[in-house]
Image (tube, rainbow, N blue to C red):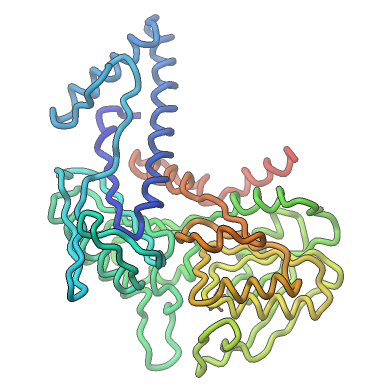
Length: 412
Ligand code: R5P
């Protein structure tokens, strides 16, 4: 690790992404501490020094190569925890406009802006004096002004850490409609974003319109499978089947079926796109068919997102009607829009499913209290990705974690 650039990595948290950013930062700090300890031990052995002296040597070189304003006060014989988080001020004006200000120098830095555009809990503006609930569009506009502020402040590289990519479902056109998913990326690119880190993006085609912007698409499969394997009373025997909830989710579910060495079944849905899914009951699915057998079996079904919940609830009801036993769903991006949580409450009561495993890609409070919901934490995965990107290291083992999953099952 190049310790002279330790403090060159900066994190800017948008109001919606503050909680996610803080957790990522804790993992970054822990990762840097571990690396520091490994390097200290190696240098101590190599140069026949005691550990504090080796640590002081690393800190000395780091201080020499860092601008004076970046010196960390305190003892020099140990790990000096980098702060990473950049001081910012976000203002919300009475007409709904927002403003982002960067309150310290980030000139020449590798900046990671963290945003959660689906955080619909009150977020803080105006030095904490204004609590405001933001729509996706408000969050998106806040992202734009933040990227611009970071660029205007002289950042060297700008990466947008956006666990959910906004408008991702508008990725292809059937009639006279826009390609909004790609256009959002193009706007971000034109503002100066070099890279986006996201999770389980609805369609990779979105990147076809970008010029230079790189999109790193992470998966929470390891975290989800770990959680699945820990479910009480769950046996991964011959009566276990992975079901793809639609044709678009086949690759994702094939991955799970292969990793778990279980058969794959498929639900085929016809959608009536003249209808807009209003809530879980009024959705646009007109017909479902099943390829495969779920009779008496435990079903595991992974989808990229839950919005109103209509798609998933309809699939669960259909699987139950086909004689399925326990139904478990895994969702990378649990939006739970509108009254979705209460529809799932009712479905759980009616025995339609056993558990839903979701990630903390989207900030939630209420659903975390539900017996039927399990959340898996993906902030360490994002911290590892940021750390590797910052150091110019390969992401391959994080993007394709099949080996780690095989090892996980070998251990259990
Ligand atoms: C569809 O292609 C997606 O993968 C999701 O299944 C869908 O967007 C979920 O939306 P909702 O929960 O509103 O039915």
